[in-house]
Image 1: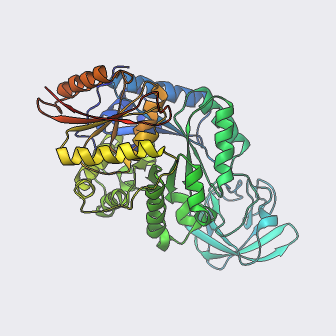
Image 2 (image 1 turned 90 degrees about the vertical axis):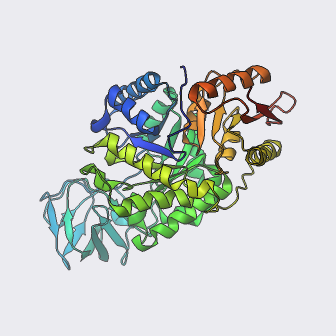
Image 3 (image 1 turned 90 degrees about the horizontal axis):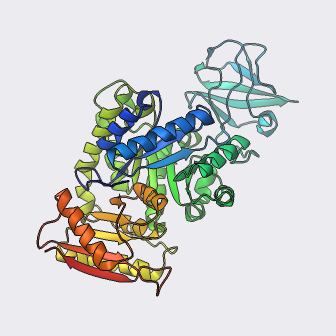
Length: 480
């Protein structure tokens, strides 16, 4: 692919967009890429393998057509607990009313509820809270009789067949990686997917099991842990350290935790990812009103801005692009909000915590930090990072300064993974193993893009075979 990516006016914070009926053509996907999308999400909770293969082909076609490198994120559904078939669909749950949870998948009376999780009634205890329909209906367990659990409605509302069940504080025996997840992970491995996200992560071993499954089938996909269970917060640092990236999945997290705590929890997760040098995505309801409106609410615009100021590497759109009426407009709007917000980071008005990533070679880390300092002192127009596996660019992304960055690699899969890193523009076709040719190539590319002119300085961080696991060369180049 001939890469023609521009450093501006695209925001440096990356946009992840979910593919769905509203954008499921190569032409529409190309429009979204041009508007600012860097990564497309395929949600395995919907559709089948053939449909996902068709979506993937369209994404790659759109990437080729636009000349822009984009990543693909396959989102594993995880052990989502759902209601079975209701006797009355929908069912109105009145305050104080008592419902019975029983084994099975189909209700036999209006006050009887079932689920797709067989051990549910055995694992619920008196006093446990049961949240239904994304937390709009709340019940509390008041008694157990054999295989029946009786729960009283605390917060009234309407429930429907197959809606989600959340059990905040309840310790479940279900594995984070279901059989369906494993099948979808194998499909991701077979199709050279760039990112695979794991739902309902509770402990580091959940992440390690998925990575081992992917590696055993030849996949180098980055594993993204979705934080949406209170148990994950108890081992947050360990989970982040075991992951290649993290998603703040505010949908289920906002039901599993007190909604009043979501903003604080988000800041904690994003801050820890910044400290450990891992990319972090903030997701769910970011521009929710744009499902049916061309403009977001003021609160939504502020939410996107605050995620950026917290230190998010990317913001994710779900239904807004998958089923919304204005998929292109929502990407354009998010990009504008990002562009308006990022100067507070790059000017130093907002200071993020320092990155302490210890999984990057210390020589590489020193070269990246030193290169950034030199680039700032010289007023460099561009910083160029050559990377073997992406770690050098990942560290660079956490610096949040004003100097634009291009990421270089001779591996197409590595370049696609760079699409998630803040401020890094992946560039293909560069002769990364020949210093003079590389500098000439980047200078010519920069002139074509209108970002380099005579006298401009560029900082290159590359490596030699002397340190096969480290980038140990730092070169300052002045355009002629």
